[in-house]
Image 1 (cartoon, rainbow, N blue to C red):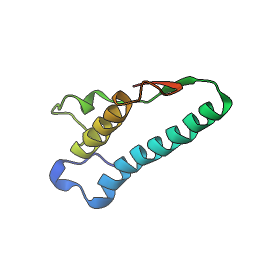
Image 2: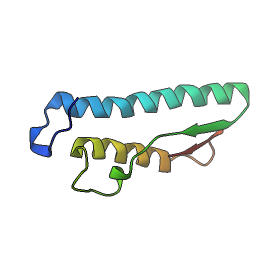
Image 3: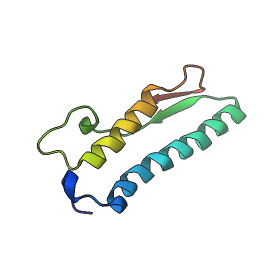
Image 4: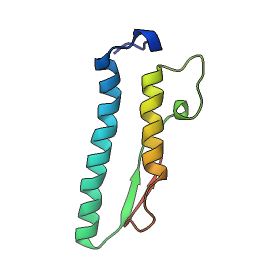
Length: 88
């Protein structure tokens, strides 16, 4: 996928970025359920991007930035009573 400006995005471009967040959410849920079932904790590291927090002229796309901001929000809202430590 080539990088596009805000006005050049189509629905498919937007969806491709946000599909990654959906996958991350449900994969993390599955892994944490396994941690709970085993009685052990663990660590999960989500890979973010600086573009989630700061828009720059060279930002690949607004859709990418929006998706990464969602990933950061998911990570920072992690419940303290979870058996997993999560960071981004």
